[in-house]
Image (cartoon, rainbow, N blue to C red; front, side, top):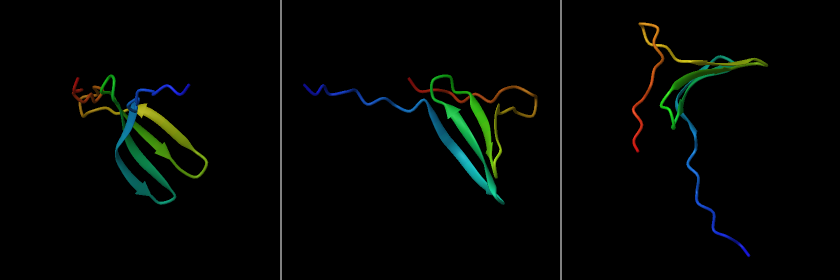
Length: 65
């Protein structure tokens, strides 16, 4: 009747978070691709964009398999 479900790992995890006034900036990592995203949240606004390094390349973490 009750099947035991496999525990799914989370696809996105918060790597870092910094509070700024009434909002926050988070670095979120896609655990499948390793791509880092910058997420901004604040009073009624939010945004998500790939995180870039100083050369303009997308920051990608190495993924353990």
